[in-house]
Figure 1 (tube, helix red, strand yellow):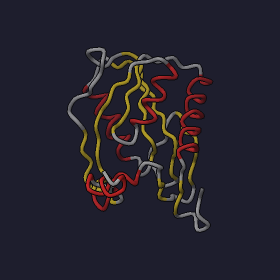
Figure 2: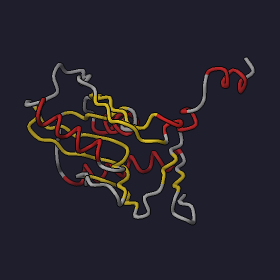
Figure 3: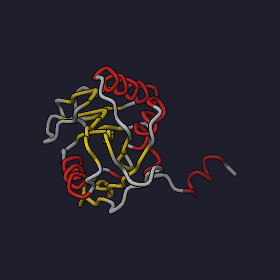
Figure 4: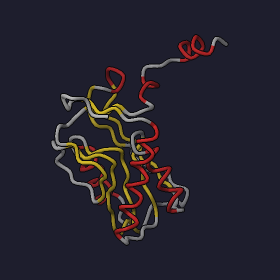
Length: 174
């Protein structure tokens, strides 16, 4: 649900999963076949996991982080992991890079540069995101929703960003 002022987009779990399914359909309908899904942790982990299950492809993970301050609402310096975790030795062949959104585009552009420079066994690389913001300097190969007002996206699991174990204890009265 987009607020009237267009500054906030609130996404329920059902909407979130529907959008991931629509992303899967876009990739499938393109006819492109790939060998591995590489998700960017953390935002791309949930979409990557679901796409990995739907396409029955191995899931590789690369950690990146830029939103750490203020419960994940302020962008800081981009950190990209040096290594990729993959169940098949080294990542190779045709790879679908998955993240939740192209916000500024900086993370995706930087990761793709790093992959093309440091992972020569990757023969083809395409990208998939749920959302693309107007201000993004990066255009993914596959995207479900274009957001012309650049809203802050409130994903359904973000309540955990500021929740701590003591709060869970209080919630569940254990």
